[in-house]
Image 1 (cartoon, helix red, strand yellow):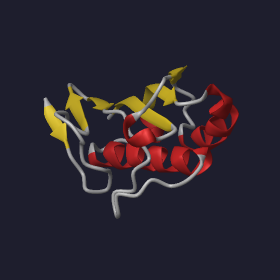
Image 2 (cartoon, rainbow, N blue to C red):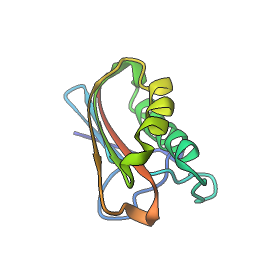
Image 3 (cartoon, rainbow, N blue to C red):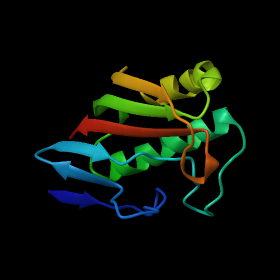
Length: 122
């Protein structure tokens, strides 16, 4: 097992890793829309979805893979009314159209609007 860590994505805010690579499969932890450069969270679902996708992409890159190799995601939304706007941003990144679960949750860390985790092959 290889622990994944990159400064291009926000550091873990709890007792977990950004991701793991196990037998050629990459598992990212859920990525919230924190900008790793300044720790800020952008306003609005589109900007937050964009930053969450960028954070997932940074971990995938650190693992030696990419969005094209993602085969499963799990997405969490604070409000299902944001589903359409979230999907528009998500579709720009997850071009392989991976299998996906998307659920609404009561709250997310730091009060963000979305979180994305991914599983990919190398």
